[in-house]
Image 1 (cartoon, rainbow, N blue to C red):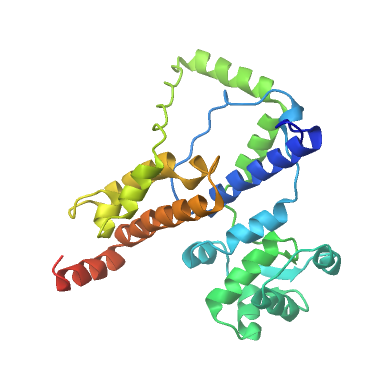
Image 2 (cartoon, rainbow, N blue to C red):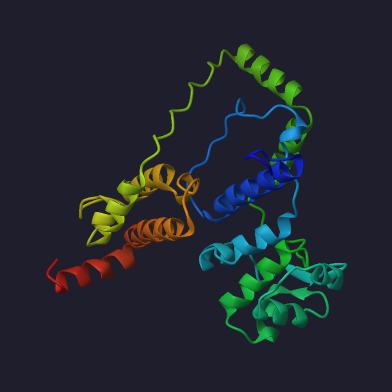
Length: 281
């Protein structure tokens, strides 16, 4: 880089880093509503970024809630070593000690329930290790639960390979059935400010941190949090911020997320309300 201008190699690295950061945040969000507007595309292949997805999937999986990991594993599913395990580890894929231990226990094809038994670790820890090792390509899980049905995945692959034809077919089907064009999606909330984020994080209670009343419903808690996430997510403020500012921003948003995690859960919220009443708040 010279005089503030990126060369081709620097631009490639920047695209790769930005793509990883965006995907990592998406992979760590276990719930929420997502939409995709096919009009939002970058023309041409020169805008693409290529990188190894295994480390990204592994790192994100390690922070997922235990109940989500449990829903994506089954006791009766088959588990076996994948080909080239040693080569993949030698290439630099780093494993936690628990993941390496569970991998060493899978010496032959077996059921996941058997892996839990022979590993001798807490069940939650073993399930997460198997889930991570599968994403890393170190374990084969042919019977793993799938989020989307196979036919839907095939349709998506077909549309991706023939985007123009698929779009034309959808338009023709809509014309024949008299279906009206979908209204445009609402504009995303305007970006907030770091001052607003810091003000929320300074709240004395989780309710004040989210900016909601004590009588707020779980649905409203979720709606308010996702509004804050769109407007005040740390990624919106990273440009131009130094390391100290980034740490302060991350810590402030972590308080907002903690408030959401407590108030969205009925049992955690009840315990928290009891604690507040004892403190006279």
